Length: 538
Ligand code: GLC
Ligand code: MG
Image (cartoon, rainbow, N blue to C red):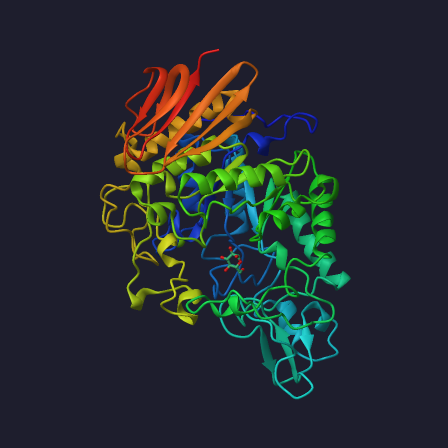
């Protein structure tokens, strides 16, 4: 099975990533090949047929670099290697070749805001105040009266400064103390990190998802963040302050432009994705001046969206309105940091959400396992892995539940491993697994495949405009239009039957996969938890 559309397009044609569906693989949990209970690169290579069968176009791998795994790979100890738990550089090259041979693209995670405290750069930096790499990290003297230099807080709880007794200064860590922040104001550090981009681009990767890119630059005067007047009990400690001086600083844009220029110096429309949790008006700034920033600042607006029609209609309208001229939209429902969609809104609505994701205007990103309806897996306290849970237990911050192994079949460990998986599989994996759903014409996997196939065969769903975004009680509706083609999307976000007035047409798809080709005229009945795609007559 191969698909090579888009491979040979020149830069003047639509770039591949505007027609693509991106699929996020969390490598620890996708497929183990050596029985150590951890997914690995060789494992991923054996599962590419699933991705081709599903119909996605690009694979984004969460970090596979050497790491002490304090934050499961988001603490990088060598930017140009592969952690032995995941395999070798040769395995990486083989996987890249296999991915490309199937007409797929490969996107790597790039983690520039911080390294591991075990990275040789940091070991040097902390060795003395005069070490040439001292300034590659963010070192400050104590405040005049003693204590940390300012009030900045870590995303993982507690303060963002760690005291180093050996050299008598604090270093900044926006995440764990084991993840010291790199100093992007230092030109040598910048060059070293740009060399990393070159290293992987030359090896053939098609793009990067850049971790916490809106945090890269910090206030040059290290001013205190002001208190957040909206803070409520039960929120994380970081919510106590407004992140004015340690995030979204104007100088960040220049760095993103430099990264983009490096990608653009390679053939093949290499893609720069930014991980950015900001309100829409700030998010769209990351397309950059003249669209020379990230091609895809990740749009997470659906992640915390209250699941009702009016709210989502507003999200779509606000986002479409905020997009700069020529900017290409994108949508994300779930990722390795967020509760899975089926747990957020219920499994019945997960099908409606899939329809939304795959029919909105813009590039969708699918998180592994959502195509088979995986939900969060409860993790017994003695099996908790994630530092976010360990540091602030009980607030629901732990990310293990959405990172559990992919169930490929109904066997004891779901075909994921022959050993003991690092996190437990879901209790439902006898039915929520790829093999069972592949032969079930009504499964959510069948729905995903059908939606993706429809996207591919109807230009309205990719290149088309989006129009008439409306909420009518629990129903969200919009149209996608291209040339004379009009496809109406009707999503029942509730559990009751709904009647919707509609022009004449015929059903292309129901989320229940049972109404194809049904004629509609003037009105259509939406079943509970059902979404419909209707091709309207001209
Ligand atoms: C990003 C990653 C998250 C990680 C954090 C620190 O938000 O998605 O998993 O913990 O950055 O690198
Ligand atoms: Mg393994």
